[in-house]
Amino acid sequence: MFFERPEAGRRALLLRVHFSDFHAQGDDSHAYAEAPAQAEALELARSAEIDVVEVVTAKRRTPHPRWFVGSGKLEEISRAMAANRCDLLLVNHDLSAGQQRDLETHLRARVLTRTELILTIFAARARTYEGQLQVELAQLKHAQTRLVRGWTHLDRQKGGIGLRGAGETQIEMDQRMLGARVKRVQKKLADVRRRRDQSRRRRRRESVRTVALVGYTNAGKSTLFNALTRATVLAEDKLFATLDPTHRRVTVPGAGDVVLIDTVGFINHLPHDLVEAFKATLEEVSAADLLLHVVDASCENPSDRIDQVNDVLSEIGALGVATVVVYNKVDVAGAHVGLSHANVAYVSARDCDGLEELIELIAQRLGVGANPATVTLPVEDGKTRAWLYRIGAVVDEQLGEDGTIALQVRADKRLMERLQSIPRVSCR
Image (tube, rainbow, N blue to C red; front, side, top):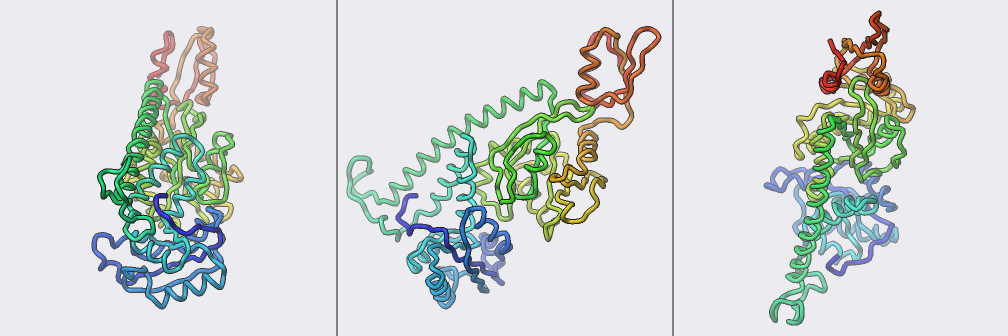
């Protein structure tokens, strides 16, 4: 962005390193823990439309302070890139700015870290104004950490218009420019957050519940969202296919119209800058009445992914929100569809199997009682009767001898309070 670097192509070598002594690295040791799964790194590359032609692995006790890997492994990487005509090195870790600069200088090729690869995908996926702002903020925050001496253009500049004094360096000017852009984007995002907060307050005034879908990326959230709402949100077999939050209304028997929110997927070692930048979106999760934690039942270690999603939920203050765990893709995993217990559901969103049981579980978690209440209303009040049928709350109907209509209704607390406020309607 602000410094001259080799052009990045689409033909790449992937580097994955296991560090056996990362706990000795101090406070930043987490950045040098064993790299995330190789399969996931390859999926990230595929989602960014990058062709990984070879994977190079290495083992070290600690990262090399200059090149991240030892000189022997560096030469192996250089030979492999030349043999495969690669113009890009993907490092499945985060690097210091100095390490990245020195690798690019030695290899004469672009080096992308895991964070930068994820940012690249996010930039390609953002469609809305809000999404583009959030990605830009994350990119700017990351760029601020990349400004180091040694890039070819970061030499001392002469004074002049726009430069502070006769000796401001290019790196100082870049820092100032980045800081100004960060402030402008943050101001625009603050306006977005205010508008979202107003929408949430309006929904609360109207007693409309919100249910947010969360989960590891590519767990099938958008497919489930489409199945529940009959919408057509983009659902692809790619990481981060959905980036911008989508809202749709869905009817839950006994709870009425509920706003269902499809959100961005999480991933292992989700860059902190992304979490910070996407606060406007992630606040929808922490403010929801219920979370549907969608889990890919066919993945190798679903419990690990559940833990990783919970780590992000904890970071955004949403771990205490009521949650239903939804194991999706059971048609692939071979689990029993529709088997629900203790806030867990098993579904196939693709085949629309198990959705009725899931909706029933959602209703229970939103406070819809198992035992119907009796709602009595005058026969001429067709509007209230039609409304109760529309939201799926009516279990049974009988016509009384006095000309009233007695409805057996499943309802949550909010719906009962609303019914009790209607003239000539009695509830028991």
